[in-house]
Structure formats: structure tokens, C-alpha cells
Image (cartoon, rainbow, N blue to C red; front, side, top):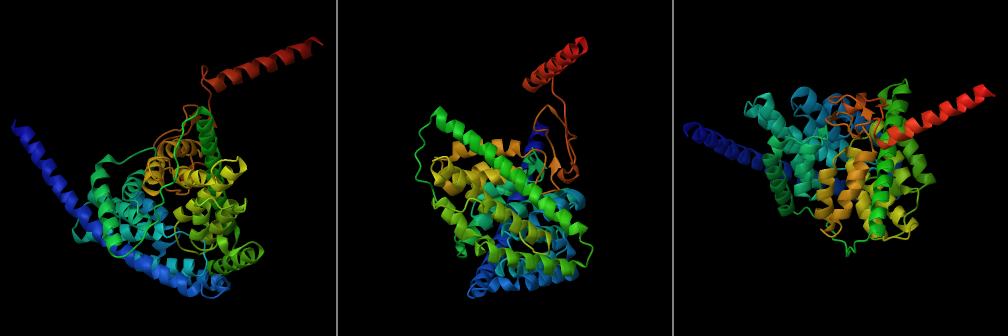
Length: 455
């Protein structure tokens, strides 16, 4: 009996400790994120007053590179990826200079038209402040990592106004197919507190419940499943486009400052050829897609290209907002092409791309409820899971660690970082569908060979 009382007492103290710590992190991140979002909004408004503001993109990339390179190299790239890397490789220890540097570099990038998101910096700012608090309190590596994950959750929750999805994102994004249950409580508290703090400070969020009354039918359900396959292929394409431009960057043997100038100049040229809709956050296009307006069919591909150039050639920012753009426009195209409701499939596409590209099907499914209402949620969840499976063992976050194999027929080592998975082997089980097909084809081939020998 005494041991049970001691156990309960220890757990009670642990709960009180983490409720207090997580609430503190949520409040700090909510305040800092609000400051960042307000500064970003003012900067975008000031820059876009001029019609050809994007002509300064080469200079913006140059400034972003200089700020990051000389003040905090850890702030390079899209923020969430760097935080994942820090949690896995450095026990969550982050240079405090990352916070102001990331804030400044991202504002410079997005304000002048760089195609990037605002959530990555918020995750990195949240993680950086949590790491600083951990150092102040002299936490060990385990508690530091937990607090940093709370910072990720709070940052994601406050930037999109999705406290539950944000909390789940923080505990789901570190591993492909794994959840950190010991961080669930503090992550939820940090996300909820951060959201309410930022809301009280005047940050407004997009919430648009769909006017959608689902009438279940096998025909509609099949279309939802097909859409999940389509969105999974779009996720696959986005990851590969990012990787392709990263390889191009590596092959250019020149100073990184020149690379930034080249990347900015290419974006200026592409903007004149196509449209300015692919610059910046692209929130207007996302809104139009969700309202059912007809969007150019190639929009989702162009956004992949604009974003890949931005993030690989000196721009600073996140990847999730561009994922939303790609998902919403791809879903809009899917709906129009098949004569379906484009608003419904733009919403499903938006969360399904997140599920596939980031390997976060649970948080993406919850986000569908928080953003679009419960009516579309069952269909969105199915599409999210299919998209997650279709994307394979790759991610827009190369530092994610693989915890599962997405099929028993695929040979891949668990525990690997997704960046190190160049290719996978396929081994069909004898009694599986593909195993039977493979065996049948082998028998047919042998039969053809026997016939040829007789002749």
C-alpha cells in the first residue's frame, strides 16, 4: 500500500510540475509568436504597396544569408526541420540567438516575396525560448527535450490557431509512425495556453466550417480514397522537387552569397513569366481555392518550384504554409476535374498534403476538424492516412526518424533518419497479393522459356 501511495504522490508532483512548465512555455511562445506575426504582417503590407516589390528578392536573399551566417548559423533553412534535428542530435540545446535571427531573416524573406511559411520560425522561436528556459532551470537532457517539444507544439498551435492539432504535431513530427506519449500532457497545455494568449493579443485565425452535409455512399467514399492517392503522389512530388533543388545548390561551386542572388533572380524571372500569386505566403490563393474558385491547374506545381528555390537558395521560413497552398490548389483541381465540390476537396487536400509530406496523419486529421468542422472530418482522415502511406519513407523534414515500415513487403531499417533512406528494397511475401502475382508472372516466364526451347 505504501508503495502505491508513493507512486501516486510522485505522479501527482510530476503532473503539477509539467502543468506549470508547459503553461509557462505556452504563455512565452504565445507572446513571442504574436510579436512575430504582427511584425510580419506590417512588413508584408509595407512591401506590397509597391507593384514590383519582388524585384528586391535577390537582395532579400542576400541579406537573409548574411544575417543567418554571421549571427546564428543554426537558424538556416526551414525552422521545424532544424528543431527536429536539434532534438534528435543535440538533446534540444539551441543557441538563444536563433530566436531574433530567425525572426529577422524570415520577415526579410517573406515580405519581399520569398515563398515560405510562417510556422517554421514560430516552431524554432518556441523551441529556442524553451531551450533557454531549460538552461535557466538547469534541466537534464530528457526534461530539456520535453520542454523543447512543448515549444514546437505551442508555436504550431499559435501560428495556425489549432491548439489540439498543434499539440499533436509536436509529439508526432519527430518520428515517422511514433508518438511521444510522455509529452502529450505538457504539449496539449502549451498549445492551448499559447493559442489563447495569442488570441487575446489580437491575432486572428482562419476557421471556416464547410457547408457540407455528407451523404455517405460507396461511390463518394471511393472518390475520397482516390483523392488520398492523388494527394500522396503530390506529397511525393513536393519532397522530390525540394530534394532536386537541394542537389542543384550543392552542385553550384560558388560562394553562398552568389547562390542567394541567383535564386532571387530566378524567382523574379519566374514571377514575370507566370504570376505573383506564387510569392510569399499565398494566403489569398489558399482562400480562393477553399471558396471553390477556379485556380490554374498547374498552380500546385509552380508553388513547389517557387518554395524549393526559396528554401534552398538563401530564403528563410517554414514549409507547412506552402504545403497548405499545394494541397488546397491540388484539391481544387481534383474537384473541378471530376465534377465534385472543389471546396470540399480543397479542404481535404490541404490537410492530406500535410499528412503525407510531413508524416503527421493524426495532427492533420485533427486540424481538419479545427479548421473546417466535424462534418468533413471522417473523409479527411481517410484521405490523410492514404496520403501518409502513399508518400513512402520520405519527408519534407529529413531529420525525422523512421519508427515503422509502411508495408510488410518493404525492406527498410527502422531507426534511420529519412534523409539517409536513398531507396528501399521490396520483398513480396509468398501469400500476399503481390507475391501471388509475382509468382504467377515467374511461372508464365518459365513456361514461355520452355516453349522456346522446344522449338
